[in-house]
Length: 559
View (cartoon, rainbow, N blue to C red):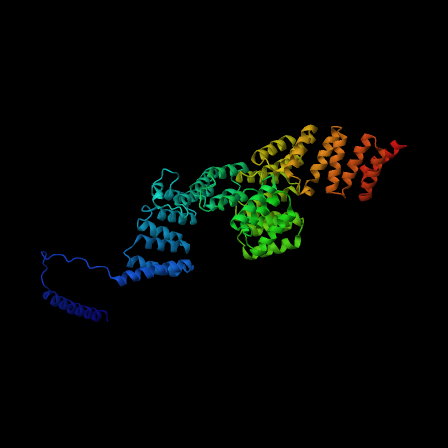
């Protein structure tokens, strides 16, 4: 069979060769002296076809049918003789389809990375998607002296986002992934300086607590008010950074400008910034009402969800928090905020070990999610596991150097366990980062009080009350009481009585305040007032042995 098949092939070969020889024998000889004909003009129909095909690829990308975009772009680059714009479209389609390796191979195989900054930036984004950080830096360079910088100016436009800003942003992300926070901060700031419209860089600096409050303000001041044609952008940035502003009137003024001049009063980012400011000023009800409005309009607005969850915890709204956590886990099982909400629910109902598990899961999903680290530390502190709590707070301090909260928590934990010296050190460090947080001064006042430095304690407590600006006084009832205690220790009884009465106006059902005020009158020799207040305290809490003993002493002295 095989020999017959071979013979058949040989016969076909002879026929083929015979046919070939006959064709070749009739060929005319080549004439090298004949002039070369001029190339014909391109076919208009062909040019129109390329234009239509190009539009088709762009439409596929805009409509998120990336596989179709890849199919047609692959044909487009062949028909257009590998035009750079068409090759960029194909590489973009690979990127949107998350075929990062294929995109990088295509760009390198066609020597496109070195030709233009847009190709280099796309290659860097693909390498970042592959988490190949060193190769990403190799493409875009580590500093301003790299080759890519020379090509940026030629392609930059004031109307679009600056390519320089995009390159600086990418460098910042790479250094953040490599845990070089100092360089990451440098490049994020460079991105905003290159183009104020690079909001993502500002978001990284603020959301990940890379800059202190003063550093944020000085960075915005250095940009200037007229650095962009979008006049509403700077007020919106300033509003975003106003969460630690001492006076609410400043925040409301900026919000009013955005509402009246630009019509942004109902914008979710504006409402989120206002909710953040209410939360940090302990106005939890107002913060909750704003965050609830935002969540009703957009249930998955990630910027407001941490504040919304924390407000639900502070207000003790267990049912709402349960449903919020359930919906988030169902919609975003891989997002840290979802498991943070679950952990917050368990924290609220007192199941701290379960809360700890879910705080840790949130951290595993996103290392730089600050609320989860603080909650993780709190879950240990609530069970008196001080060493583990301090370890969590220390890690948060290292990761979020622009935030004073981990340092504040470390100071409070040292204070709780009796370490007054380290407590003061951590609280003073927190003060340097955020000098406008009243809680820092309250805790410093407690440290001074326990050290017997009653005059210093009064100064700190008064500063804390000053920073509250007379707002949300319910949250500052302990500050009024501690200030009154400090005045009483200094034998300034009239001042002590004044602040005890202010504390009573905030918490009129507190037996401890009635007892302390009665004791102050007792020390002044005003026994009738003292006996009356002791009776009020015992009417609220009849089993208070200390107040009972004080009442017996007052009755004995009155006889």
